[in-house]
Image (tube, rainbow, N blue to C red; front, side, top):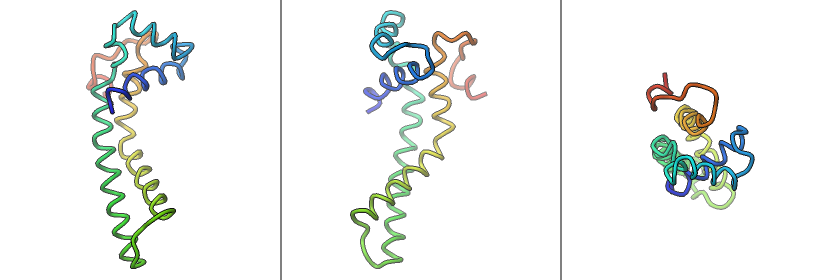
Length: 125
């Protein structure tokens, strides 16, 4: 998923921050300036965010479903399962937000007037 998600994130973040005027022109510029690798800026932090996010989401969802069953005596289904999954995803987003900030900063540093980060450690500090 990260091989598809990273270029989409790079382009989305750079359009949102005004670095590129559109996704189409941004893709062309990123490839022109960095080759295909230009679309994968921040790949490592994207993987580093997604791995714990998926683990937190599914672990929290499983625990919430077990708690729901213990409280109600029924399996969560339909709307209750949807609500538990949404809550689990919210918890995972909160827990992985610091990693997402690093990912976003690495992806949007290109073409900014700021001194580029030397890497993840520099960005974190």
